[in-house]
Image 1: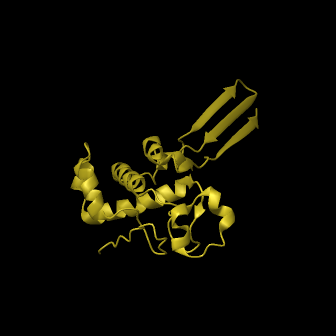
Image 2: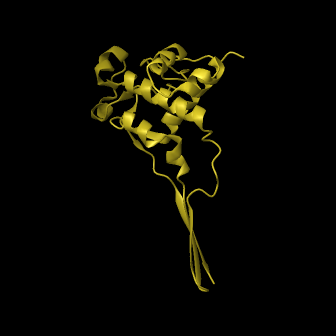
Image 3: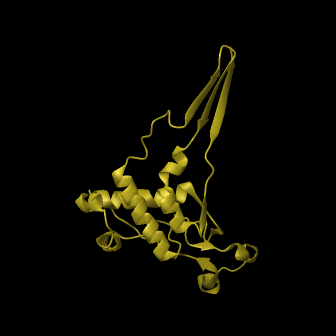
Length: 180
């Protein structure tokens, strides 16, 4: 089965599934150290990794501004916060200079996220990650759970690439208390 990568090129495509093509990702990894896992992957796995990486970036980071179009499939391109009150513009050419589409940064972050996902299956995490227990002898038992897995989908070094355009979504957490 051939996986088709449809690149978001800054025109707000409704069917885009990646911020970078396989060919451009190959060029990126040709100049990156310690990318043997990328080199040894099949083209199909590389394509899937790029698509999943794009999804992870879109799902686990909150980007500044708003989507250019309600019909676009990816989070970019985006209108800057200054333009949100001027949404009466309907021609792409009219507002093109208000768009944010950091192509090089999105490509780099997508490649790094794809490599991270090839190295580790981030979808399978230990359910006990983040659990901490405090028990005061005989009276109170407290368990806290911090969902660290959300930020684990996009590691800090990848977030740093896009930090000018995004911030991390807050994780969730809960606390369970029992009286002894």
